[in-house]
Length: 339
Image: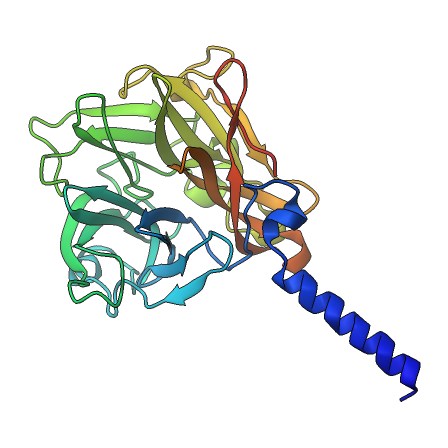
């Protein structure tokens, strides 16, 4: 090889190495647009000490860790073997566990998770707890507590997946959940955070009109799922995902929002439309680089609000990847996210 060719090749390698190690913030143009394209679906996140932990759909529940929300390391799954209660009660479930939520309360980490048969409402939500999320800690051990709720075909017109837990203004825990069917539901949890509070109290907080004879594969414009509640400035904000996930380059996912001063709603969009009757204002949708984006979570770290979600990467054949974006707020208090 000619000397100058060697020099040019060496220069090219140096540029590639520099690009690889440059912070994502430099490339993204914003100090808080932190993104690492790891392969995740339905991500949720929490921080313990200086370490961020990401939980996502996967066999046994996928787990990742990071000190900067940019560079992620894969950890061991939560479950080495599938929860027995789910194998016993959910047809077709074999360990691929969906859409978790992570919640810290009074010294315990609660990991809620979904088990289901794809496209049906034969589903359940379970919960496991741990005293720490650091795998090297001597107290690290996931303890499964089994089912929180279950939906049954022919009995229920709702689907028990996609859980999210939040405390209301009085410190009482509530769970939002749901996918397709009759919409997103909300119920109050008992003090143990493992069972519904008695007497049971249920609310529909978001829905889209649907003919109940159709399954999820043919739901069309009725597609709605993945509720996530985020409290800020006197409001509870309800994020949901409209349209279709899981179709690679044909995915049409997008994130919608409404808000309410009370946790039970009504959740109204920017135009005053009730989300329980099809309302919702757009937060973020796909573009030339992402076929669709959705199934979000929202968090505040060090005074900065973040939207954590997945998108279908146009430049990688529609594979699902992690996206983290800073949430800005307009003058009327509505979330603004730039993809």
